[in-house]
Amino acid sequence: MGLYAISDLHLSLSSNKPMDVFGELWKDHHMKIMENWNSKITNEDVVLISGDISWAMKLSDALVDLEYIHRLNGKKILIKGNHDYWWSSISKLNSLYEDMNFIQNTHFNYEDYAICGTRGWINIDDNEEHDEKVYNREILRLKMSLDSAVSAGYDKILVMMHYPPVTRISKSKEFIDIINDYKVEKVIYGHIHYDSKAICINGVYNDVQYICTSADIINFDPIRIL
Image 1 (spheres, rainbow, N blue to C red):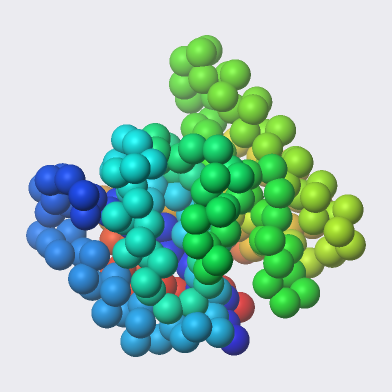
Image 2 (cartoon, one colour):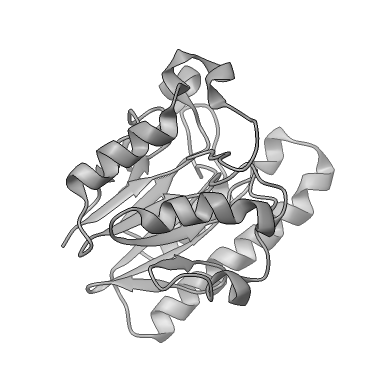
């Protein structure tokens, strides 16, 4: 049994939005993901998917992409990305597939670890004032997710976020403080893509391991976390 991660699948199986407009690297990327995924991941494994799952705008359109993920090996734990406009009520999402769990204000377990998470947001110091409300809501959601894990008795915690709390050019102090306060071991994130990979922090920062799992950066091949 292993824990793996990949993010930013950017699936568009129900619409004409090919990702290769962003470069040859993305050509038939859903086929690359499927081949790599099923060659290493068994139904005993768990895969973390840190957002930007589907380009669909409505859940009814996203179902084709979610079905694609459902058919891949293993159990999946997912969080929302900034492009996941189809994301609907969390109870409805969690009723869709037995092998797919969607995190919002809660946690799921992997062996003796709690998997927590939320989308996150861009550092408000770098953005317009109107983003502060979204930023603060995401702070609250992360705390609720972590509190649910602590209340359940977990002291080994991993966090999934779509937006990185820290890069080589920016830091979101409030997210970093929460991550440190709850003694999180690893933060798995996405959002950053290949052309900007130089700003990723892949390693230890403030005693926490940060791991970028954006699909194009990891060559569309889920990486092992535990």
